[in-house]
Every structure is written in C-alpha cells, then in structure tokens.
Amino acid sequence: MKLRMEKSLKFWVDCSYEDKKHENANHARVELIAEILRDYERSGHAMRYLNTKGQIAWKASPRMLSILADLEREAEDDLADWP
Amino acid sequence: MFLSPCFSARLKRSAKDPVPYCKEALRQDLARVRNAWDECQAQRERDAIYGYLTAVFDLVAWWAAEDRAISRARWALQLQHLALPTTEPYAAVILCTADPKKVDKRTRSKWSRVLRYAAEYKPTAEPLAAFVQQRGGINKCAERFTRCPVRGA
Image (cartoon, rainbow over all chains, first blue to last red):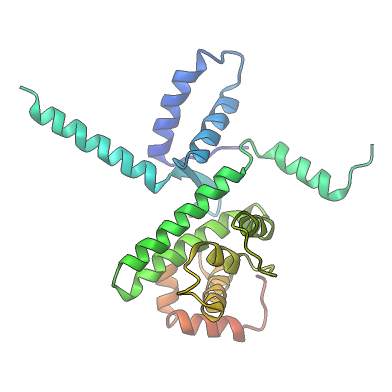
C-alpha cells in the first residue's frame, strides 16, 4: 500500500527516517516510514485526509504547521540578529 | 481453521493497512474537530460554521473511504462515553465535538443531512462551503437531502 504524503510532512518524515534508519538497519524503508507516521499521528502532528483524487493521504496537522511556522520565525529572528 | 467472516475481513484490512488507526489517533482527530468548533465559535462571521462542518465532513470522508465510517463513529461515541442509537457517522461526530448546549438534536440532524447531501453530490475537489452556498445554504441543502428520492448515504 502506497503512503501518500503532502510535501511539508514528507520533508519531516524523511528527516526522521534518516535519523532512524541506522538504528533499524534490518527494517524495510516502508516499515520505518509507517512507524514514523504512526508516531506522528498519535502525537497529533500528522493526520489522514482524502485528497482531491479521493485517495487517502497524509498531511501535517494544523498543530504541526503552527510549530513549524514558529520555528521559521525564530530562525528568521536569529538571522536578523546575526552580526 | 475456521475464521468468522468479520474476523477475516479485519485481518485482511490490517494486512493492507501499514498504519493501523489507533485510539490515540482517533482522540487526536476528534480534538482537531473540537478545535474547529472552538474557532468557529470565536468568530463572528456567519459563514464561520463552514470551518467546523468541513472538519466533520473531512474526518468522516476518509473513514468512509476505508469503509469504516459507522464503526469508527461508534468508537468515537464510546470514547466520549456518549450514547446515541445511530448508524449515522456525521451526527455522531457532531455530538462528540460540538457544545450540546448550542447544538440541539434538531440542528445536529440538519447539519448531518447537509453533510450526507454533500457526500452524495459534492465533487471531491470542491470546497464544502462553496458547494453548500451555491445550492442555497445549509437549510436548503438539508431540505434537498430530505426530498432526495435515492439516498446512498
């Protein structure tokens, strides 16, 4: 079964996958991605939805999007303070 | 070994689904719909209710795509310790997420009819608010659903 993901979520899931893959060398990529999505969904950072083609897909939750927006603002502020 | 049809269907489904839907995920989904309710209550605009109805509609839409809308709606009611003798998932999600002091049985039934009408006729890509507004609004869509001779929902 294909796990369809919207762009911003996919970026963070791929980052988590890179962190996890060394500790889980005997796991298939799809298994690890599924595990990451399960954790994201449980913690309220990812959610499932029906895309415009009527397929079930995954996206970042409003909570995750707001956390990412805050981080981006902080990074911009830090950059502005850079001498 | 004999497996009941219900058990074997569940087994097939879990074999296909690499990320099984768990209780915590359901809680998070309901919490998000409840947030949409709080947000729409905090706004003064007349159309703010569409934000909430869209959240309800979207949740039930993907449950329905997995052919699990009724069982998950019952699970949601159970999780909230609510009793509603229904096989109607929209009404169940509304009962679980909206303030019962503000949404009585009649309103719940009306919104549920609107959402069932949209589930039947709305193209997937069209936003719920646009679909309902173009067809005369919430009351008109509820009425259309009631009059509808053939109902798949």
